[in-house]
Image (cartoon, rainbow, N blue to C red; front, top):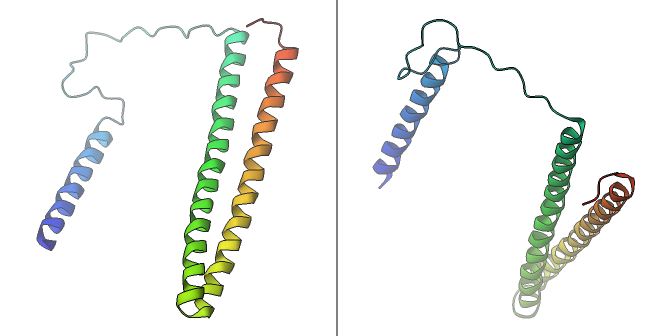
Length: 147
């Protein structure tokens, strides 16, 4: 079985090197090999005008996505710490009653640490969410457009 893993690694590295060479070949602005350049230079399109309202809306969307991602990361961390707390609590109580007591005590202390970290992440996620709600309300009050 290790031979198949070695072959798979070698093939993956060869594919990666081939992809890097293909990217380097086109890095100088050369067209892809399957496209023939036309006679003469290609006309450049003027940049599309961007209104200030569209730019502001784009900033709002980016801010909303970034805030939601921050809150999502906190929630994922909270879930992980709560899972670790549950596992450590179960293992600690089992080890304290059936196995060596020192191991049970160590696991219960680690469970308490995981619970403290979970509560800390919950507090951070809660504050981020409140800040997001307050910011949205403030934007609604100050923005001239009606949704």
